[in-house]
Amino acid sequence: GAGVSQSPSNKVTEKGKDVELRCDPISGHTALYWYRQSLGQGLEFLIYFQGNSAPDKSGLPSDRFSAERTGGSVSTLTIQRTQQEDSAVYLCASSLDGSTTVAKNIQYFGAGTRLSVL
Amino acid sequence: AQSVAQPEDQVNVAEGNPLTVKCTYSVSGNPYLFWYVQYPNRGLQFLLKYITGDNLVKGSYGFEAEFNKSQTSFHLKKPSALVSDSALYFCAVRLGTDSWGKLQFGAGTQVVVTP
Figure (spheres, helix red, strand yellow):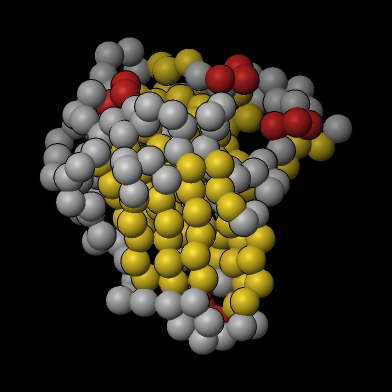
């Protein structure tokens, strides 16, 4: 596609429910990233996928958070048993690859999913 | 640990005046530095990057940034600000050799350009 697409754009859920956020990266991009943007915490890295390698999950805040990337393209970020502190904008980005050639690694961001946990 | 700091929460400037958004970094080894801009309800847009070479980097929308190794700074500049430049600006550093994909962002600086 022309850019990184995220859905839904807004999600309101009740505390304790599970939510799934979707990211469709730019066609041909092998690297995909999830970030969280919240007041007081700024932009936090969550998880990074590069091709078929094991994802870098070092930024996931708890075991309630998980992500997968099927077929090397679309990714889903799942938050189980949502808490109010999970309320934030979840941003997805993709890049051509995650190699050491930084020129290839410019990250292009989607518009984000605004999650509100009541 | 690699990090960037943006010391100003907000910068106010009149249209037509020069705009500077400050960023300092702390990295081991060669820094790979980026500037992104975020308009309301939009994702981040890439402005420019510093990898190596010339200390003055030119980017999108008339922005440029100056890499200063002795001062560990990477300030974003624009000679003549526009009202449409009002947005949230983020400085970022690419994290270490074992995690090439991750970016560490600064807290962001809100730029307000008044007519």
